[in-house]
Image (cartoon, rainbow, N blue to C red; front, side):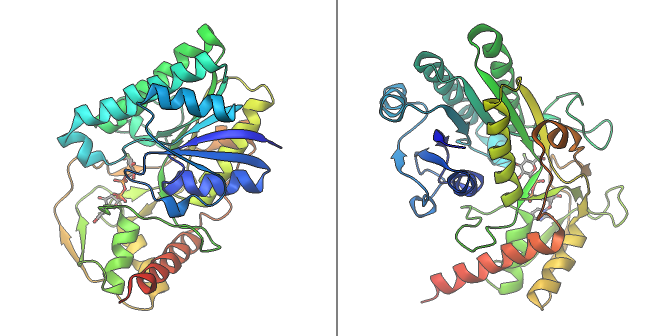
Length: 330
Ligand code: UFG
Protein backbone atom coordinates (compact mmCIF):
# COMPACT_ATOMS: atom_id res chain seq x y z
CA UNK A 1 0.00 0.00 0.00
CA UNK A 2 1.21 3.52 -0.66
CA UNK A 3 0.08 7.07 -1.15
CA UNK A 4 -0.51 10.22 0.81
CA UNK A 5 -3.25 10.48 3.42
CA UNK A 6 -4.30 13.40 5.59
CA UNK A 7 -4.74 12.62 9.29
CA UNK A 8 -6.76 15.32 11.05
CA UNK A 9 -6.19 15.14 14.79
CA UNK A 10 -3.04 13.11 14.19
CA UNK A 11 -1.39 14.63 17.28
CA UNK A 12 -4.06 13.12 19.54
CA UNK A 13 -4.36 9.74 21.23
CA UNK A 14 -5.97 7.52 18.58
CA UNK A 15 -4.77 9.71 15.68
CA UNK A 16 -1.09 9.46 16.60
CA UNK A 17 -1.22 5.68 17.04
CA UNK A 18 -2.92 5.46 13.64
CA UNK A 19 -0.30 7.68 11.98
CA UNK A 20 2.31 5.19 13.19
CA UNK A 21 0.32 2.26 11.77
CA UNK A 22 -0.20 4.08 8.45
CA UNK A 23 3.54 4.71 8.10
CA UNK A 24 4.22 1.03 8.85
CA UNK A 25 1.73 0.11 6.08
CA UNK A 26 3.62 2.29 3.57
CA UNK A 27 1.49 5.45 3.56
CA UNK A 28 2.79 9.00 3.83
CA UNK A 29 0.73 10.37 6.73
CA UNK A 30 0.32 14.15 6.86
CA UNK A 31 -0.96 15.23 10.26
CA UNK A 32 -3.27 18.24 10.46
CA UNK A 33 -3.81 19.36 14.04
CA UNK A 34 -4.40 22.61 15.89
CA UNK A 35 -2.61 21.19 18.96
CA UNK A 36 -5.45 22.35 21.20
CA UNK A 37 -5.61 18.88 22.76
CA UNK A 38 -2.86 17.02 20.88
CA UNK A 39 0.91 17.17 21.20
CA UNK A 40 3.54 18.01 18.58
CA UNK A 41 5.83 15.34 20.10
CA UNK A 42 3.25 12.68 19.19
CA UNK A 43 3.69 13.49 15.47
CA UNK A 44 6.63 11.26 14.63
CA UNK A 45 5.75 9.55 11.34
CA UNK A 46 5.29 12.41 8.90
CA UNK A 47 4.95 16.18 8.69
CA UNK A 48 2.70 18.28 10.91
CA UNK A 49 0.48 20.97 9.39
CA UNK A 50 -0.59 23.08 12.34
CA UNK A 51 -4.02 24.62 11.86
CA UNK A 52 -7.73 24.22 12.29
CA UNK A 53 -10.35 22.23 10.39
CA UNK A 54 -12.61 25.30 10.71
CA UNK A 55 -10.16 27.31 8.59
CA UNK A 56 -11.13 26.68 4.97
CA UNK A 57 -8.18 28.63 3.53
CA UNK A 58 -5.82 26.49 5.58
CA UNK A 59 -7.54 23.27 4.41
CA UNK A 60 -7.27 24.45 0.78
CA UNK A 61 -3.56 25.17 1.19
CA UNK A 62 -2.88 21.77 2.82
CA UNK A 63 -4.86 19.83 0.19
CA UNK A 64 -3.17 21.73 -2.65
CA UNK A 65 0.26 21.08 -1.15
CA UNK A 66 -0.11 17.37 -0.41
CA UNK A 67 -2.92 16.16 -2.72
CA UNK A 68 -4.07 13.41 -0.31
CA UNK A 69 -5.94 10.40 -1.71
CA UNK A 70 -7.95 10.03 1.49
CA UNK A 71 -8.60 11.62 4.87
CA UNK A 72 -8.65 9.97 8.29
CA UNK A 73 -10.66 12.36 10.41
CA UNK A 74 -9.92 12.24 14.16
CA UNK A 75 -9.95 15.97 14.95
CA UNK A 76 -12.73 16.54 17.50
CA UNK A 77 -13.50 17.51 21.04
CA UNK A 78 -14.29 14.30 22.91
CA UNK A 79 -15.29 14.89 26.53
CA UNK A 80 -18.88 13.86 27.21
CA UNK A 81 -19.16 16.05 30.33
CA UNK A 82 -17.68 19.13 28.65
CA UNK A 83 -20.11 18.69 25.77
CA UNK A 84 -22.99 18.97 28.25
CA UNK A 85 -21.67 22.21 29.80
CA UNK A 86 -20.48 23.81 26.52
CA UNK A 87 -22.55 22.24 23.72
CA UNK A 88 -22.15 25.09 21.21
CA UNK A 89 -18.40 24.60 21.24
CA UNK A 90 -18.92 20.93 20.42
CA UNK A 91 -21.35 21.67 17.59
CA UNK A 92 -19.00 24.26 16.10
CA UNK A 93 -15.83 22.23 16.35
CA UNK A 94 -17.13 18.74 15.63
CA UNK A 95 -19.95 19.49 13.20
CA UNK A 96 -19.09 22.80 11.50
CA UNK A 97 -15.43 21.74 11.46
CA UNK A 98 -16.28 18.40 9.85
CA UNK A 99 -18.58 20.10 7.33
CA UNK A 100 -15.79 22.50 6.39
CA UNK A 101 -13.44 19.54 5.93
CA UNK A 102 -15.96 17.60 3.82
CA UNK A 103 -16.61 20.61 1.58
CA UNK A 104 -12.87 21.01 1.06
CA UNK A 105 -12.57 17.30 0.23
CA UNK A 106 -15.44 17.58 -2.26
CA UNK A 107 -13.88 20.61 -3.94
CA UNK A 108 -10.40 19.05 -4.10
CA UNK A 109 -11.68 15.71 -5.40
CA UNK A 110 -10.67 13.70 -2.30
CA UNK A 111 -13.17 10.87 -2.38
CA UNK A 112 -12.51 8.72 0.72
CA UNK A 113 -12.75 9.32 4.44
CA UNK A 114 -12.42 7.21 7.56
CA UNK A 115 -14.28 8.98 10.36
CA UNK A 116 -13.83 8.59 14.13
CA UNK A 117 -17.30 7.97 15.46
CA UNK A 118 -18.34 6.52 18.79
CA UNK A 119 -20.61 4.12 20.61
CA UNK A 120 -21.99 7.29 22.24
CA UNK A 121 -24.12 7.69 19.07
CA UNK A 122 -26.29 4.79 20.29
CA UNK A 123 -27.34 6.33 23.60
CA UNK A 124 -28.96 3.95 26.08
CA UNK A 125 -28.84 0.37 24.79
CA UNK A 126 -32.16 -1.33 24.17
CA UNK A 127 -30.37 -4.59 23.33
CA UNK A 128 -26.86 -5.92 23.86
CA UNK A 129 -24.38 -6.42 22.35
CA UNK A 130 -24.75 -3.25 20.30
CA UNK A 131 -24.81 -3.95 16.56
CA UNK A 132 -24.61 -1.18 13.97
CA UNK A 133 -28.35 -1.33 13.27
CA UNK A 134 -29.16 -0.53 16.91
CA UNK A 135 -31.16 2.75 17.07
CA UNK A 136 -28.93 5.79 17.30
CA UNK A 137 -30.33 8.08 20.01
CA UNK A 138 -27.41 9.84 21.69
CA UNK A 139 -27.88 11.17 25.22
CA UNK A 140 -25.02 13.71 25.15
CA UNK A 141 -24.18 16.62 22.84
CA UNK A 142 -20.89 14.83 22.12
CA UNK A 143 -22.72 11.78 20.78
CA UNK A 144 -25.16 14.00 18.89
CA UNK A 145 -22.34 15.83 17.10
CA UNK A 146 -20.75 12.56 16.01
CA UNK A 147 -24.10 11.26 14.78
CA UNK A 148 -24.63 14.52 12.83
CA UNK A 149 -21.36 13.92 10.99
CA UNK A 150 -22.38 10.33 10.21
CA UNK A 151 -25.59 11.74 8.67
CA UNK A 152 -23.58 14.23 6.59
CA UNK A 153 -21.41 11.40 5.30
CA UNK A 154 -24.50 9.42 4.34
CA UNK A 155 -25.77 12.37 2.29
CA UNK A 156 -22.49 13.30 0.61
CA UNK A 157 -21.84 9.85 -0.87
CA UNK A 158 -24.77 9.72 -3.31
CA UNK A 159 -24.38 13.40 -4.17
CA UNK A 160 -20.60 13.60 -4.62
CA UNK A 161 -19.24 10.05 -4.57
CA UNK A 162 -17.46 10.67 -1.26
CA UNK A 163 -17.18 7.19 0.25
CA UNK A 164 -16.75 6.76 3.98
CA UNK A 165 -16.27 4.33 6.83
CA UNK A 166 -17.50 5.60 10.20
CA UNK A 167 -15.73 3.68 12.95
CA UNK A 168 -17.72 3.62 16.17
CA UNK A 169 -15.16 3.20 18.94
CA UNK A 170 -16.06 1.68 22.25
CA UNK A 171 -13.60 2.48 25.09
CA UNK A 172 -10.20 3.28 23.60
CA UNK A 173 -7.48 2.18 26.03
CA UNK A 174 -3.85 1.09 26.34
CA UNK A 175 -0.72 2.48 24.75
CA UNK A 176 1.74 1.73 21.97
CA UNK A 177 3.50 -1.53 22.99
CA UNK A 178 6.83 -0.08 21.76
CA UNK A 179 6.42 2.78 24.24
CA UNK A 180 6.56 5.58 21.67
CA UNK A 181 3.03 6.85 22.28
CA UNK A 182 0.34 6.74 24.91
CA UNK A 183 -2.69 8.45 26.40
CA UNK A 184 -2.20 12.08 27.51
CA UNK A 185 -5.44 13.88 28.22
CA UNK A 186 -5.60 17.19 30.04
CA UNK A 187 -7.70 16.99 32.10
CA UNK A 188 -7.76 13.20 32.41
CA UNK A 189 -11.25 11.79 32.98
CA UNK A 190 -10.85 8.16 31.85
CA UNK A 191 -10.93 5.22 34.22
CA UNK A 192 -7.72 3.38 33.34
CA UNK A 193 -5.22 6.30 33.48
CA UNK A 194 -6.90 7.58 36.65
CA UNK A 195 -6.71 4.15 38.32
CA UNK A 196 -3.05 3.82 37.33
CA UNK A 197 -2.36 7.35 38.59
CA UNK A 198 -4.01 6.50 41.91
CA UNK A 199 -1.85 3.36 42.23
CA UNK A 200 1.33 5.32 41.42
CA UNK A 201 0.38 8.22 43.69
CA UNK A 202 0.42 10.70 40.79
CA UNK A 203 -3.36 11.17 40.86
CA UNK A 204 -5.87 11.40 43.72
CA UNK A 205 -7.67 8.35 45.08
CA UNK A 206 -9.93 6.86 42.43
CA UNK A 207 -13.65 7.53 42.71
CA UNK A 208 -15.75 4.57 41.61
CA UNK A 209 -18.83 6.11 40.03
CA UNK A 210 -21.72 3.93 41.17
CA UNK A 211 -21.83 0.49 42.79
CA UNK A 212 -25.58 -0.08 42.49
CA UNK A 213 -25.86 -0.78 38.76
CA UNK A 214 -27.75 -3.91 37.65
CA UNK A 215 -24.50 -5.72 36.82
CA UNK A 216 -22.79 -8.69 38.48
CA UNK A 217 -20.62 -6.56 40.79
CA UNK A 218 -22.71 -3.37 40.73
CA UNK A 219 -20.29 -1.29 38.65
CA UNK A 220 -20.52 -0.23 34.99
CA UNK A 221 -19.42 -2.53 32.22
CA UNK A 222 -17.50 -1.25 29.19
CA UNK A 223 -15.84 -2.80 26.14
CA UNK A 224 -12.18 -1.72 26.27
CA UNK A 225 -10.39 -1.81 22.93
CA UNK A 226 -6.62 -1.39 22.64
CA UNK A 227 -5.57 1.74 20.76
CA UNK A 228 -3.20 -0.33 18.59
CA UNK A 229 -6.17 -2.43 17.50
CA UNK A 230 -8.08 0.78 16.73
CA UNK A 231 -5.14 1.98 14.64
CA UNK A 232 -5.08 -1.29 12.68
CA UNK A 233 -8.82 -0.96 12.02
CA UNK A 234 -8.27 2.46 10.42
CA UNK A 235 -5.63 1.06 8.08
CA UNK A 236 -8.01 -1.79 7.21
CA UNK A 237 -10.88 0.67 6.60
CA UNK A 238 -8.69 2.71 4.28
CA UNK A 239 -7.77 -0.45 2.35
CA UNK A 240 -11.45 -1.37 2.16
CA UNK A 241 -12.31 2.00 0.61
CA UNK A 242 -9.34 1.81 -1.78
CA UNK A 243 -10.59 -1.58 -2.94
CA UNK A 244 -13.92 0.07 -3.85
CA UNK A 245 -15.87 -0.77 -0.68
CA UNK A 246 -19.23 0.93 -0.17
CA UNK A 247 -19.82 3.48 2.57
CA UNK A 248 -20.53 1.87 5.91
CA UNK A 249 -20.24 2.16 9.69
CA UNK A 250 -18.46 -0.40 11.86
CA UNK A 251 -18.25 -0.94 15.60
CA UNK A 252 -14.76 -1.27 17.03
CA UNK A 253 -14.88 -3.26 20.23
CA UNK A 254 -14.02 -6.74 21.46
CA UNK A 255 -17.51 -8.03 22.13
CA UNK A 256 -16.66 -8.62 25.81
CA UNK A 257 -17.26 -6.26 28.70
CA UNK A 258 -15.29 -5.54 31.86
CA UNK A 259 -16.61 -3.90 35.00
CA UNK A 260 -14.99 -0.95 36.75
CA UNK A 261 -14.05 -3.29 39.61
CA UNK A 262 -12.42 -5.77 37.20
CA UNK A 263 -10.33 -2.95 35.73
CA UNK A 264 -9.30 -1.77 39.20
CA UNK A 265 -8.29 -5.32 40.15
CA UNK A 266 -6.19 -5.70 37.00
CA UNK A 267 -4.48 -2.34 37.56
CA UNK A 268 -3.57 -3.46 41.08
CA UNK A 269 -2.20 -6.76 39.70
CA UNK A 270 -0.05 -5.02 37.08
CA UNK A 271 1.13 -2.27 39.47
CA UNK A 272 1.82 -4.76 42.25
CA UNK A 273 0.11 -2.45 44.72
CA UNK A 274 -3.45 -1.52 45.61
CA UNK A 275 -5.45 1.17 43.85
CA UNK A 276 -6.60 3.61 46.56
CA UNK A 277 -10.29 4.03 45.74
CA UNK A 278 -13.56 5.30 47.20
CA UNK A 279 -17.02 4.21 46.19
CA UNK A 280 -19.26 7.11 45.22
CA UNK A 281 -22.53 7.94 43.49
CA UNK A 282 -23.22 7.31 39.81
CA UNK A 283 -21.89 9.79 37.23
CA UNK A 284 -24.76 11.33 35.26
CA UNK A 285 -25.21 9.89 31.78
CA UNK A 286 -23.33 6.60 32.29
CA UNK A 287 -25.26 3.62 30.84
CA UNK A 288 -24.82 0.45 32.96
CA UNK A 289 -23.36 -1.60 30.10
CA UNK A 290 -21.89 -0.87 26.66
CA UNK A 291 -20.57 -3.85 24.72
CA UNK A 292 -20.02 -4.05 20.96
CA UNK A 293 -21.04 -6.62 18.43
CA UNK A 294 -17.87 -6.40 16.30
CA UNK A 295 -18.99 -8.87 13.59
CA UNK A 296 -19.30 -6.34 10.78
CA UNK A 297 -15.73 -5.03 11.19
CA UNK A 298 -14.52 -8.62 11.04
CA UNK A 299 -16.54 -9.43 7.92
CA UNK A 300 -16.02 -6.22 5.92
CA UNK A 301 -12.59 -5.07 7.07
CA UNK A 302 -11.04 -8.42 8.00
CA UNK A 303 -10.26 -6.87 11.39
CA UNK A 304 -10.05 -8.63 14.72
CA UNK A 305 -8.62 -7.26 17.97
CA UNK A 306 -5.17 -8.71 18.68
CA UNK A 307 -4.00 -6.95 21.83
CA UNK A 308 -7.22 -6.00 23.61
CA UNK A 309 -7.06 -8.62 26.36
CA UNK A 310 -7.19 -6.86 29.70
CA UNK A 311 -3.59 -7.71 30.61
CA UNK A 312 -2.22 -6.11 27.41
CA UNK A 313 -4.44 -3.05 27.76
CA UNK A 314 -3.46 -2.38 31.37
CA UNK A 315 0.21 -3.35 31.10
CA UNK A 316 0.87 -1.08 28.08
CA UNK A 317 -1.01 1.80 29.72
CA UNK A 318 0.91 1.21 32.94
CA UNK A 319 4.28 1.13 31.16
CA UNK A 320 3.43 4.42 29.45
CA UNK A 321 2.37 6.05 32.72
CA UNK A 322 5.53 5.00 34.55
CA UNK A 323 7.63 6.32 31.67
CA UNK A 324 5.77 9.65 31.81
CA UNK A 325 6.32 9.80 35.55
CA UNK A 326 10.08 9.36 35.08
CA UNK A 327 10.07 12.02 32.36
CA UNK A 328 8.22 14.47 34.62
CA UNK A 329 10.38 13.75 37.68
CA UNK A 330 12.34 16.76 38.92
N1 UFG B 1 -15.27 5.72 35.96
C1 UFG B 1 -15.13 5.71 37.34
N2 UFG B 1 -14.29 6.63 37.90
C2 UFG B 1 -13.59 7.54 37.16
C3 UFG B 1 -13.73 7.53 35.76
C4 UFG B 1 -14.58 6.60 35.20
O1 UFG B 1 -15.75 4.93 38.04
O2 UFG B 1 -12.86 8.36 37.75
C5 UFG B 1 -16.16 4.74 35.35
C6 UFG B 1 -17.27 5.37 34.54
O3 UFG B 1 -18.38 5.65 35.35
C7 UFG B 1 -17.52 4.32 33.48
C8 UFG B 1 -16.16 3.65 33.27
O4 UFG B 1 -15.41 3.99 34.44
O5 UFG B 1 -18.42 3.37 33.97
C9 UFG B 1 -15.42 4.14 32.06
O6 UFG B 1 -15.41 5.57 32.08
P1 UFG B 1 -14.50 6.42 31.11
O7 UFG B 1 -14.68 7.85 31.51
O8 UFG B 1 -13.12 5.87 31.08
O9 UFG B 1 -15.13 6.14 29.68
P2 UFG B 1 -16.65 6.34 29.22
O10 UFG B 1 -17.23 4.97 29.09
O11 UFG B 1 -17.40 7.31 30.04
O12 UFG B 1 -16.42 7.08 27.84
C10 UFG B 1 -16.18 6.40 26.67
C11 UFG B 1 -15.42 7.28 25.70
C12 UFG B 1 -16.28 8.43 25.25
C13 UFG B 1 -17.61 7.92 24.76
C14 UFG B 1 -18.27 7.14 25.83
C15 UFG B 1 -19.60 6.58 25.40
O13 UFG B 1 -14.26 7.78 26.31
O14 UFG B 1 -15.62 9.10 24.18
O15 UFG B 1 -17.45 6.04 26.18
O16 UFG B 1 -20.40 6.33 26.50
F1 UFG B 1 -18.40 8.96 24.42
